[in-house]
Length: 395
Image 1: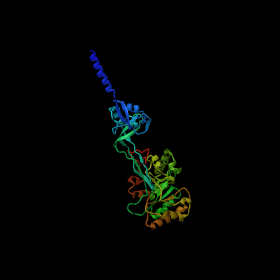
Image 2: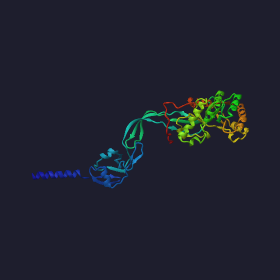
Image 3: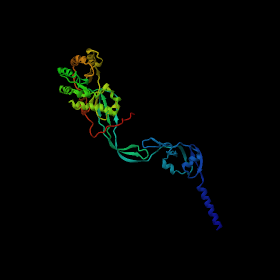
Image 4: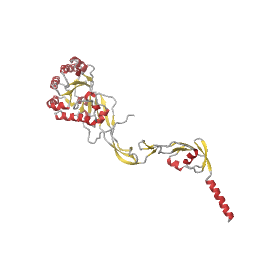
């Protein structure tokens, strides 16, 4: 019996020593003796390493908590281990181990089907006509939603989103014809009827960018413009501060109130504006909330507001003229006697060079880059569309 107990103790002691023996591993280029089956955390502690832990990050990559990610990273035998591999590792001896800083840990998340909201694709180059080239529509997708942050990231697209696309061009007649568009701002006024008489005399049309209150006060002039065959569009309600300086609510009021006034005065529906001072940028488009379809500025400036004399106005409107050019003149807003004197000379000069006169709607319709609904002058955002609240970030 004693002999048997001694034998059992011998083998048990041997087994204990075997199971608790030390093995050699190579850690970050140097040898280390550790207990067999040591974990990588044991090895980090035994080596006295102090790797920087990763962070806990949201599904979109924002840091939620510093130092709450993986405590360290590990490569064994040239193979980088994931979290499960790090937990499962047990040292058996002769492993070549590299310990580094910990990786970030992404928060837990769940999946939801959500609408993908469109964004606005901004334009870079500025032409005389800036317009909606594509109306925005929401898409659908499967999103990963962070359980901690509530942030969401698109994982799978079910229905493609359609961004708002704004383009800005100088319209060019695709049939090769020579055309120009004369435009008048700030009316209607006491000069409007006299302008129309001149246009009638030469059998041509123009575009009148009218102010909302002036349209309300002079419906007979608005109707006279329409009856003559010219186009009525908007120059906003008050012609106050530049539109880019207005808060979104005031901006939309400036646009929609003028449209309502013009239509109420008999000018017909329009969603085309000439922004005061030619001021209308990407941010203004985003804030407009789909209230307009096109913003029109000019290529040739009469500079009539400086009262330079009729001959100077003629020169400003004809020198450098080209097919598709838009000419800026004024109806109201001051003394326009010089314009009345200059207008026949402008028409005769350009007609002598083979130019025909068109409205802005007609000019837009001559360039297929501009969608047909926008070229009609009264395009509105379709009911199945949704206006974006942010722009596509530039790369």
